[in-house]
Each structure stands twice: as C-alpha cells, then as structure tokens.
Amino acid sequence: MERLVVNGGCTLKGEVNINGAKNAAVAILPAAILASEGKCIIENIPDIEDVHCLERILRSLGCGINKIDDNTLEIDASDITSVNACTEEVRRMRASYYFIGGLLARFKSARVELPGGCPIGVRPIDQHIKGFEALGAEVTIEHGAVAVKANKLIGANIFFDVVSVGATINVMLAATLAEGTTILENVAKEPHVVDVANFLNSMGADIKGAGTDIIRIKGVSALRGCNYSVIPDQIEAGTFMIAAAATRGDVTITNVIPKHLESISAKLIEMGAIIEEGDDCIRVTVDKPLKGVNIKTAPYPGFPTDIQQPMSILLSKVSGRSIVTETIWENRHKHLDELKKMGASVKVEGRTAIMDGVEKLTGAIVKATDLRAGAAMVIAGLIAEGRTEICDIEHIDRGYPHIERKFRELGADITRIRVE
Image (cartoon, rainbow, N blue to C red; front, side, top):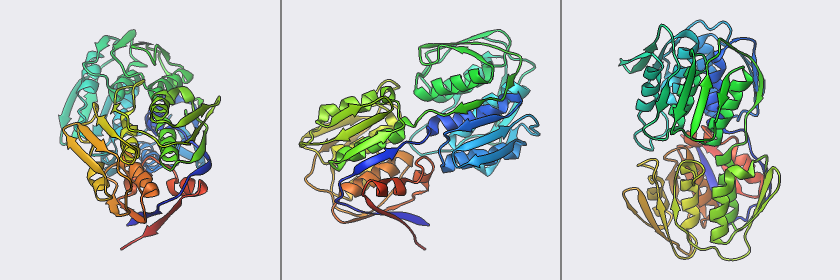
C-alpha cells in the first residue's frame, strides 16, 4: 500500500505542464475500435492508471497495442476477436461503458460488464440505453452485464432527459455507422465531448454541432485509422490553478486552453487572485488575502463538478463564509469529513456545504475518498501546518499523472511512501 506524505507550509512557484485530458482519452481509446482498417496513433495521452486499464481491455478484445512512448499509443483494431468485454478491468472503471457504443456500431453486438468508478453517487446508464434502443438495438442487462444487439442501426432523433456526458459520447459512437442521420438534443457540451467528435471525424465520421445543444451525425459505411492528439486536461489545469492560489504562489500552467478554464478563472478572480492568460498558458498569483465565494457546479460551461472538491479546500482557509452547492453528484462532499480532521469548519446539508474560513489547518492522516477528492487532500496538505499522510492514493493515480513529481518541481515537500 502506498501513501503520499505532504509537509505543509510551502509556496508553489514555477511552471507546470498539463497532460492530455483524462476524460477525453478514456473515451477516445474505446472509440479507436471503430477503425476497421488502418491504425490509430493517439498522442498526448495521460500516463495514468485509467489509460493503462483501457489498454488491457483493448488487448483482451484482440486489438494490437504498441506503446510508442509514455504519452503515445498505436492501436490496431482491424482484427478484433471478441465483442465481450467482461473482465475485472472493465468492472473497475466507469469509462468502460464506451465499449458498448463502439462495439455496437461496428459489430452490431456487444456484451460489457456494468462499470465501476468513483463512489460519488448514483450513475445510471438509462440515457445510454434509451439512445441505443432508439437506434434499433435490443438491450438487456443480465448477470451484471449489458448485452446489446441489432440487425442494423438506423438514425433517429434522440432527446436526452438529462444532460449526460457519458450518454452523449456513447450514443454518438453508436450512431457513427448507423444508416441515415441521427440528431442528438439536450447533449453535453464539455470540451472532451468535442474532442471525441473531432477524433471520430478524423477517422472519417460526419459529425457536426459538438459543443452546442444539438449534434447531427450522418452515418458512414466505415471508419479508418488516423493520427490524433488529445486536448489538454481542463481538470488537471484547474487543480494546479487552485493549488497556486491556496499556497499564495506564483505558478504558470502551460499546455492549456484558457477558454476551457473560464469558469475557474472567474471564481479565482472573484476571490482576489490574479489571473494572466496567454495563448496556451495561464499564470496564477496572489498578492492579497483571498475572500470566500459561493460555488454551484453545473454542466459546461458552468463550474466543473470535478473541480468542486479542490476548490472547497481553498475556501476552507480564506476569510468569510462560502457556500458550495453540488448539483451533479449527490455524494461529492465525502472529502469534507477528512478535511474536518484537519480543523476545517464545515457543515454539510444534503448537496450543500457551508464553509467558514479558518486561520489554519493542521496535518493529519486522511484518505482519498475518490479521484478528485484525492487531489483536494494534496492541496489541503500543502496549506496545513505539519505533516499530512494521504491514504488510498490509487484513486489519485487513476487521473493525475506523476502528481508528486509535478508538485515537487513547484517547490512542494511531497513524497510517496510504501507502508505495510
């Protein structure tokens, strides 16, 4: 078992380079199975456990995987031997459900174990199923797996009952090879939805409107391999922006798309931080005391739910009262119980957390309750007095590449240790 040990009191300074977006990569890798000829060479892939897990799933289906370097994969899906993704790897991660849409589109059949992922709330796949059935598939859930099959897929008009990133991407995958035109309404607009659509178009798909309320997909007969580079990770970038502000530092975050970070930048500016934008970088500095603000998560372009937890750490130690309302996931305040061990003043009422800033946090043994909560506890350790030990860091490794090395390069006192 491994832990991260953080000795607090540092001021982060320097430059940090952001990796490719986890949320885009975990959809693009399953989407590569749609290429019936040629190879997909995908660059700027984050070196994280979720990606390694997807590599193993792809191999189990018969894909050829060539790891060109830590951030580049070559995927040959031309000779897939199985449409059954039923392994322990599939059960471990949420994004494995994208294999349903990809296999259904190409082979008109798939059987995929129901996915796992972070315990942040109920995450049904009813909107995915609604979309597959509208395209003409028969969907059954049996023995813990989703089985889909169709004689053929035919384009349809599909209105999602709720805005869902997963359903938007999954049904988009299935529709790429359907006959006729599919129109998806009330779709998610997140940058990684747009990135997946761009990847599919690079393979020969005909998708328009990604990033807007309506996506139109004209089915094509086949898709081919392509070269593609994943967009920068909006959430990793936001995490380092908040860490810079929390430590009253001076950090330049490179390889970012500033527009994707506007909601985060706006809140930091409201708090009193200084944000300077370049073409592909953002500099965060603080020269005066920060003040509390209210946060309400929302689908893009609103404030990201994945940044709510790191932001709550910053709010716990600034002057005044802050109210954090989580509208996406009902269990995304679990990390605040860990933060209370460090001296935070916080009260949780349903999906709302009321936070009164305290003068100091003190180090403690805490756990990463999920992926983003783990990164949040690292920030808590950076601004606490004394030593903080973070357990269950396998959650962090799912989404943040080499997190301790990146923070050390900015001046943090953080190490990874092994304990019995």
